[in-house]
Amino acid sequence: MGHDWRNPERVIPWKPRHRFRVTEAGEQAATRYREAMTHAQGAENARGALEVAKSEWATALNLRPGDGILLEEMATGATSLADLQPTLEACDLTLRDARGVLDRLVAARLIEPLEPMEAPTPWRALLSRSGLSQSAPLDLIEHPSALVSFTATSWPATIASRASRR
Image (tube, rainbow, N blue to C red; front, side):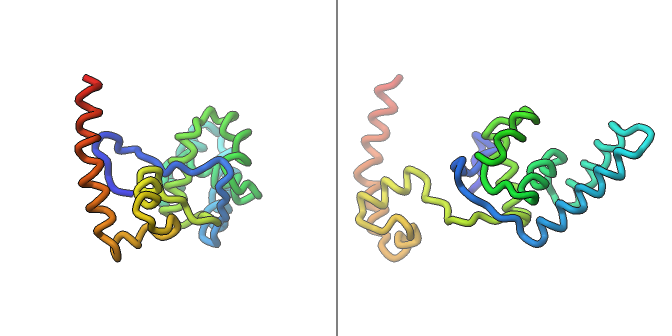
């Protein structure tokens, strides 16, 4: 997904039932997370030690400190956002926050989706109008006229609808 200057924290709209599996690297990272948390809990200043341990763990993997909680849950059997719901509520995480965590875990190759992600809504509409298959958005490369014809017919309508809202 490209960078969006209007929303730098843009996340993939994973469906609540979209399933993931933890990779071997993810299992190892979850084990290191558990070990770091267990070790930190035994420290004299447990709260401070936990924060430092989470931060060090996350920095090494290019993640955020709170991402380890969801990775650990997924390593113990949770496979979807729906399965993670009790944890999200306990940690006061929104669905958007959780989707951001999933994005970072996928990018770090600690988890991977079991099903392919559907094309976002605008692409589905474009593909259905062009007669191309919805499971192969790369067909646009082979049939660029579909994109050109869609853009030529929808662009004036988009401009007109935005102008009428003002």
